[in-house]
Image (tube, rainbow, N blue to C red):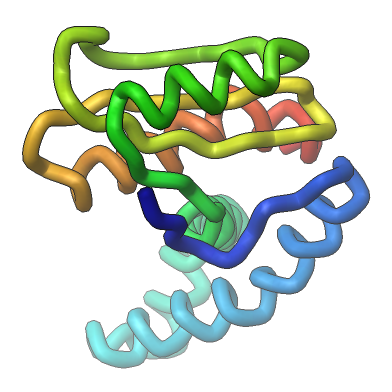
Length: 140
């Protein structure tokens, strides 16, 4: 079992603070990407909208969510020790591995199962966690 990522907000206030912290990085990323694509000033102002920067911020925040990667048994054991959490699981319960993200403020753990493709499962899980927990909690 191992963990990956940085953000594991215990409270909604922590989540909001971490979400705010990635704002400048998202803006810089969008600006530098547009520059690399050789947008002139007019095209930049036309195409780089607030929605574009918001999407970059959402993606950056979700990519930094802390996840745990383990076996099905390790996940089942975790769930048995944390019965107070609602479990939202995607995938099959007959595969060998699970990746999960815990959101204490929401009383929820979001999980995705996988057999071989850990990186894909981690990315999918982070997007699911953002969509299922953080998007509404952050009032986006």
